[in-house]
Structures are given as C-alpha cells and as structure tokens.
Image (tube, rainbow, N blue to C red):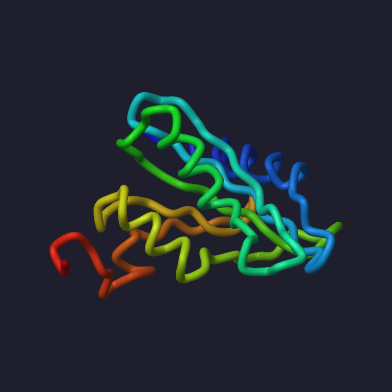
Length: 134
C-alpha cells in the first residue's frame, strides 16, 4: 500500500530546494518507483523562462537518469513562498513527460500533507500523445 501522506511530506520537503527567484512559486515533487526508491525534485527557474524545469520533470529525469523506468505514484506540492496551495496540478509539459514513462492508471497525488486527492494520469491527460501516434 502506498503511504500517500509520506509521499506528500517528501514533496513538501523538496520545495525547500526550489530555485524560484522570478515567480516565487515553489514546487516540490516526490516520485515513487516500483523498486520502492523515492526520487524528489523541485522547480528550477531561469531568467530565460523556457529553460525553467518543473519539479515533476526534475524528479522523473533524475530517476530515469539513474536507470529507473517503472513508477507507482507522484506527489506534487506547491505554492507561493511561505504558503502551500490546496492544489498544485502539473503543467501540460509535465503531464506529457509523465505519460512517456507511466501508464494511464499511474497515480498523481495533489494537495498537501494534510489534505490531498489522488488522480490517475488518464484523468489529468485524457487524450495523450504517445509512441502509438508516431
């Protein structure tokens, strides 16, 4: 059984490493692999906004770069500095990256440590583009 509360806690902690001097919107993510290892990530901004990398993609790219390819769940926590939003959904680019590595039933946990909701990837990206579309 997945300990969603712990996953949300680790996502919350990952926010502490956010580099967000422009938006002041800090996001942390915690990605649980099937092997049981958890990869965290935070958003890293850049003055040239297109070079910014989201927390979700940071966690996924970290895991993939270390050889992981099978994932169970992803927790996302975000908000302006000093605050935690009730709901911080992944952007469209992150949803597409998640779909590259995860099945439609992959779980994405949104909210905070105390109150969160679990969604499937298919709920957040119902008409995804995949290798089958190439």
